[in-house]
Amino acid sequence: MVRPPMLAFIFPGQGSQQPAMGRSWIDHPSWSLVALAAEASGRDVAALLLDADADELRRTENAQLSTYVLSLVIHDAVRALGVRATVVAGHSLGEYSALTSVGALSIAEGVRLVVARAAAMQSAADARPGTMAAVLGADDDLVAEACARAAGDVWVANANAAGQVVISGDADAIARASAIAKEMGARKVLLLSVGGAFHTPFMAPAADPLRAALANTSFADAEVPVVANVDGLPHQHADQWANLLDAQLTAPVLWRQSMQRMVDDGITTFVELGPGSVLTGLAKRCSPTATAITATEPDDLKAIAALANSRNALDHHDGEHLFASERLVVSPTAGLFVPALDLAEGQHIEQGRIVGHVAGHEIRSPFHGTVKGLLAVTGERLTRSQPVAWLRTA
Image (cartoon, rainbow, N blue to C red; front, side, top):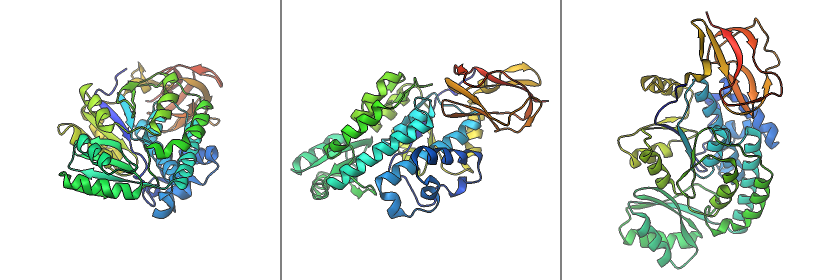
């Protein structure tokens, strides 16, 4: 098995959403995840991705669900290419996308958790309105001092990169802190398109509903480490995530520290999976020598495949050699196996064809070929990389 060395997937958070952001994906096989998300959420997710306007998407319950689902559609498309990450991370909401991408959450569990989180945060924001702003050209300490001098409800919410810090809180207090930061040397302050004062004590009323949702969520060990927002450290064990996600609600997002940890651990390539390219820009600021690319549209997949090939980063465990013309399709994660109902021995299948599901993840064939046999049965508990089908490709 060859893993993609030094490659990280990073997932955007709320604020990256855009009207019609799913339009280019509707004819891609990975769009099938939208139906799964709609069933799990009881909402018309396709309408959010295709028809919702900017004001509708600005609402927290719409922004979070739509961004989460589209990020996973894009991740599924990238994964079907055979590209795998060494480590993943996500910015705020994006942490839920990251966890789902590495099997710590099933898609259905992830959707339900995101819906519960968004509803709780929307309720908290409605009860105590607030906003956020990005302070550019100032370091963390200067911005923290400006917030303290503003003498109001405003705090550092995101340490995004050197020279980019996001503050969050009451709109009037943010205005005062912004003016003070400019007096102290900050270059510019930009208000963000979000619906609340996230990652501050304003979100405390959302804590109990989120904890209840977390308590009813089944987490699994992650396939690869996930660098967490609250401490900038890699985590992989199932029993850690409820506490980390609970703390993330009101704690600052340590994105700069998370990125630096990945760079220090040897990551040289960052691929942002989801709407927008904010994290791609932050990655370049954190490590000017790193390669940072965005996967937003289907046309971006060619560049990712070419990049992976050029770095020998394709994960060939998805088809280990039996003979020159035979391959195995294996499970991408651990969990219970459900084969595709219409898959049969002797059937010719195309590359990217779904051969089954495990723990909410699609198992796709990376090859064209003829099915010689299924190697797993319905309900069998699989380990990661366990063979599920045998193909003849010649």
